[in-house]
Image (cartoon, rainbow, N blue to C red):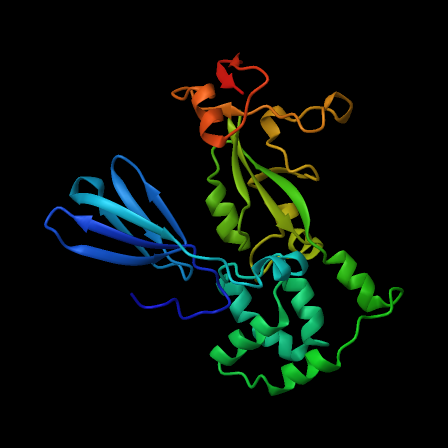
Length: 275
């Protein structure tokens, strides 16, 4: 099994699939989906494989260890070790024209050292970037640069698309990766960490800004990161207590036992089971 060649991306899984004819195929995977109809594997670069479930005899998934600096880097740069969107890689050229690598790293939420590695892959000379990282300092908090950084800071938003609209079309159009997708009554919504620039400016010509997209019903701040189905007013919330909804085919006590929690109560809730 060859190792994943990009040290800036965490590869969670190695998947071995044994087929009915005895052949064993190995995949480096960012996520794996198994359904009654197919087994789908995708790597961090977007490559994928799909096999009919009926042709699969067994599947073995090995979980890879996190990089030693994973948690410390993500505390400062939340996108550290995440797959690179093509837009991020293409925009590395902008970094060479910008005021400095450190400001760009803060905007992209990726460690400067990872940006250097990707720049080298794309044929850029990282020497000047490394010098910039060493010599850069944080801007004065009252400067225009600091104001720009605050305006560009990521925030949590819930984006509701209009009924009948495929949310993946909206995500692709605006080159956004969702944190979650929600089914909301007759429509769909997705949670995302967006910057002010992503809301107000389009990533490319000919595409409306996200806030002006005709397929979007509304965009609202989502500071609590709660599923919108069961969001309760602040005054009605109890710290440490949650409502967990399971599928109609699931048993809430079984789910709770599997998760290692003891529910205070379990039973039907609005035609769904709650824990």
